[in-house]
Image (cartoon, rainbow, N blue to C red; front, side):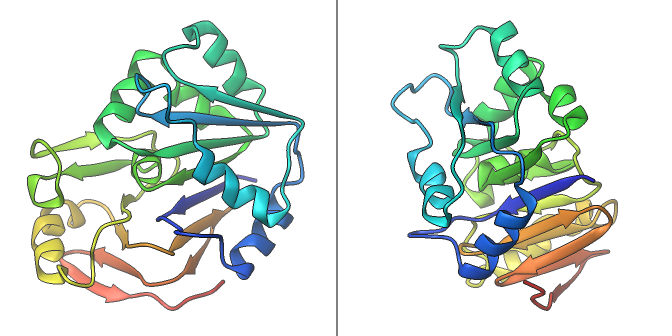
Length: 216
């Protein structure tokens, strides 16, 4: 059964309810493979994202970080053998380029691992996403993500203070695909055909926006 976690950003630790379902979902704890969103900056080691799992009591036998220090073939092997794949926060565009450069997207999509993404990582897990200068990005364009689920994600953006802007920017894309928009301390969990919500998450569909009820 596919299990995917689209996370915002957690400043200190994961909420207890989220930690509980992660404990239930992550039964294979042999290998955690983290994918850098700034693969040329070797100092970025995913310590914050890893600490969320550590504090929840989820420990692994092996920990791996994929960036440009890792050879492409080795990175692909790590993905194929991963228990959990975690796409880290950082630069959405740099991560997108890295996934294509190392040909990781198809391997992630085929993997039976639990796949998690925080902020930029979560956005790149989705089917399509909007890169917009109004969201602080460098250009305006729609990109293809890994496509783990057939929806789009806007994660870790100051949504509450920019609701009209977000709705306007995402209106066109929302006619084609559902968009889950959230800020910090939020999560969208997909387990099989079921979607669970933690925190203030909004669904934008056919240009209309509505707040979703929490289920976690």
